Image (cartoon, rainbow, N blue to C red; front, side, top):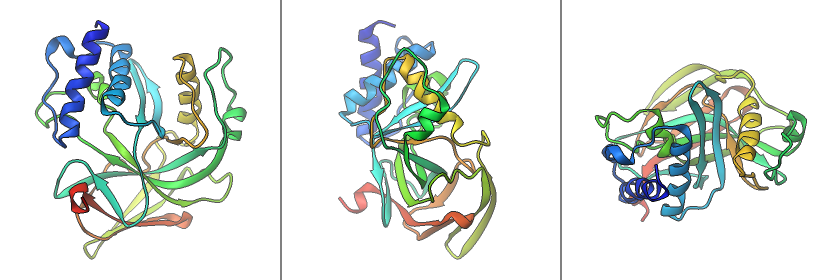
Length: 253
């Protein structure tokens, strides 16, 4: 893809997202065909949207797969606001790591000890999921990577004790008079492993992380569907709880 095609792809995706709509698949000549092209479109998408990078989502890579995307929106409090209107919303229960120091791009890889020492705090969190493409669009992984891997933002919950990085716990989700229990477990066992990969992968791309940015590293219970405009309680075992409700942003605009 040429730089012009990459920018056109990002502008296409940005236009639909700014309207709160799911997009059809990009025209064939604007679809990414490699990880590098998809990542380049993703970076341009944030420029087109004029959004700051306040954090990153990350997962361990696989064959022909990079699991990473910038996070632009942070939320706390009574509401989780979504860009797309729906009767149900998708969330993922996670941990969010707040960085205490910059981790600038450099030639030498960062050690796990250096990265762990850069964590200022760990919080319970919810990844807020967006569907960038229409359900029948036929989007594949490169398409989803280009569009930000479903991330619309991050809801920050209570802080955990220092050096607390749970691998598993019982998750209890309550809403609408119902209670749902999950044997919550991090997909990589150690929730820090994707953070270690992210820092060094971004560094190899000439991208550093900054003090005050947040990183999430994978859902403990997959994608959860919860009803709109309904009180929601998530109990993360003995580690704390999140109380909120999911609504369309037009509710308070």
